[in-house]
Length: 372
Image: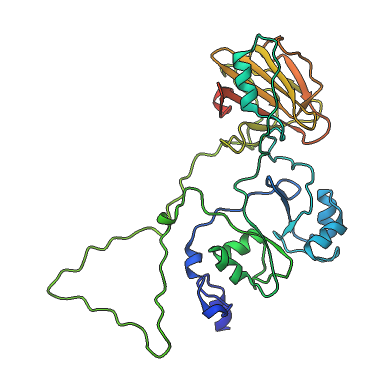
């Protein structure tokens, strides 16, 4: 019982191989929280996707929910189709499924919106066409390393390998209380806390001695000299809390005094994040009209490599608005559009949402200040 109680502590390494080194230092390193999966349980990254199991899931029920082949999932993860999964367990996907509801709707590879926007500013009234360039697809947060468990490895040796807390490793991957892993299992390695550099995380090296030497005796303080002033350093830099936008209550309806109006009405399912999601994603049923946020000129209409249209509208004061994941385009390049005029509609296949951007010249900015 005492051993089990100690094993529950982050500072104890149940794996005594390789000299019995401790994961205590790694346990002190701050790790970010795993991204929240979409409504189906999917987390998408540029190079892979994973599915997160729910309570009572089997591999077969998970495969049915995400629209994947259970046989492929079984072979890829070394799990039988009828096996029960732990709540929060991560299942690696051998191939990509459709982008998740609420996931990134950044235009697909093949279109550089910055290039399109820049050309649109300079040539809004000209007849030249835009060119397509490669754009990295969006992702849900920083892409973590994906580690496949090899024979003989444990959660503790893997945590030590990547210098992370075994507790964080368990939280990210839905491991059980015994931290058991299986050969061939894929694990997501927790990423470091944003804005926390190694100098900002205090780690304490454990002093070790050769067996038989005993523990080193600390030097007693001298009565002739005052004790040094004690300076304390926080174990980790406090995470600054920022006021989160009211996503759940925001039904995408701007006030009459707003500089721009919402292009569709619906819940904001993905907020603006510079460099990760250069706009906002607004859920709306397929076929919903997509309307111009402000009066302007249709500066460019292009398509990504999957043929999905992207519309760029130029406004006064060097502003651009971008509308992607649309279909049934109603306008042509060079058309004058009024605020609220229909540009297109939410497409009938794929994610039922609009990706909307506001750009000041070449730079993307948060659309919400313009809409509220």
